[in-house]
Length: 436
Image (tube, rainbow, N blue to C red; front, side, top):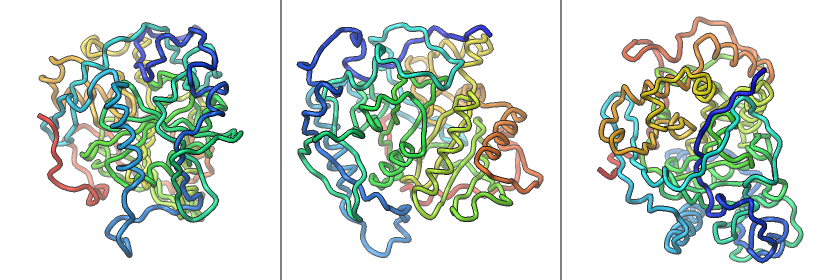
């Protein structure tokens, strides 16, 4: 079979990315094995037996100070901004809510379109071996690293301003994204020195859920893009940022899938996303973070092994996970996407799919409409028939057995009425401000 490729321009995530082929050695203070073991990065240790966070309305007492998100992550991010490590000031980018039922969010981010290098991006393989010659996160400088994020043994979180590595082998690090989409845009790199390819496993996915839980804020989300679904670097990483608006996908209604067996002991619920342009599955609940992480990670592993590109949104402080199998890059490679959509140069990855449209041209931003956003995301979605096949793969691989009932298609045309219960969004505050 002929290999599918598309000419594309990857996002620059690090200031060291464009000259990654240059030999640098140990003198450059990098995050590789030559320099990181001698470093003393700050260390945040989370409690490893954390249960799912409760919503504020269920809390029995006042929550602790929001140190992890505000003082540590966002504070360190702003410090790097003051040092001039970012390629542009994302806080000056215009943002607006597009009028319409869905409430898609549009951002004009012309800086993200600058200083990029062309490459051949392979889209027909979700799993590809790690290539140490290509850019990876061991090649970035330690000034782009914010802190280590690792599990502890006790029931309390701890922070150490300077923590020697001391031969630790499974270092997980949070670094800035130098081409940010939003305020506080960072990357979580699990087991950095293991040089893992962009491939989800249960352990690393649980780490991402812990990060969402430690942030404890519904406006701080994590996202994951597989290869073939607009991941640009084949080194395992999750993205995260803060946006004080609910994403449209978080407000979309859901329809619970009734299971005959497979989830009884975990407490996890699986639902279909309804009335949204991209078909997807929604995972919630679980007695612990690990219960939820295991079910979602096994679903992702199934997609990986069946060579199906996908995106993941970790929402609601780790309580709710959206899983989107997608096919946009394949359609693009086969010439099945309209030139009008291609001209926008928008690559619909997890943030765009969730409803945050990052636009690179002022014309597209000024003319942005709900119809445009819907038509772009509809190209991302699997067809109704293909989605049912993929859902069957996932359920078989994860041991889930669905009760056969008549279900309404979760992606009916806009305006079609049906009975469904909207997802709870009461934890989002009203009247959030956005730049106009």
